Image 1 (cartoon, chains in turn orange, red):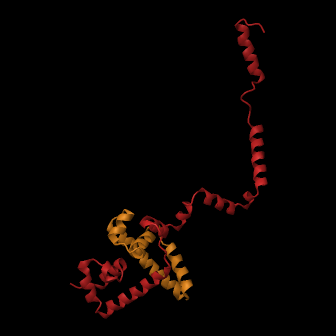
Image 2: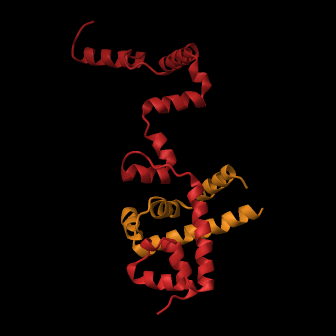
Image 3: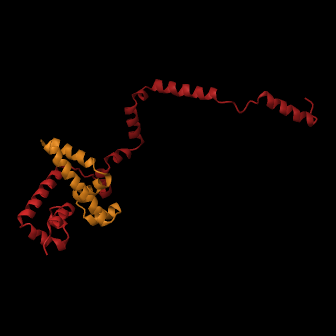
Length: 70
Length: 144
């Protein structure tokens, strides 16, 4: 799969995530904020943020793997 | 105390492969876990996943953290905040018929006429109103 296609696929999969999971991923992974800071910004508890982040990454990993295998 | 495989996998999802993101009390244990072949494989897999995520071509906004967050999480909202000019432009783009001024003017005039002829007048009294008024005037002894 070429770079452009992979980027579009990734963009689609991230866009398909539920909004709060996407926000958690953006804050923690792309913005590099700590889990604590991201939880404060989103106004949720640390555990809830961690749960959102984990679910986002697990979903992405699974869907990306499936898409690349097709 | 060493980390279990589940703890390591959960930690990798939460903090990633960069050691500085991990809580200080766990770092030494993760570094030790890296020596273990199973854990090392988990970490390599996570590194591959993270490098894939970094291919997103993410472009941070120019102004402030709040804008960057909104730009990343809600790209549509940035367009919504562009103002009425952008909204009108978008509307014209959606409805090309509005780009013909003569047609728009004719439509407005027709709508105006329709409303004007359709509404009953409040200023001109009907024949019943005249009769009522005369009755009162006659009772008061006014000669017409």
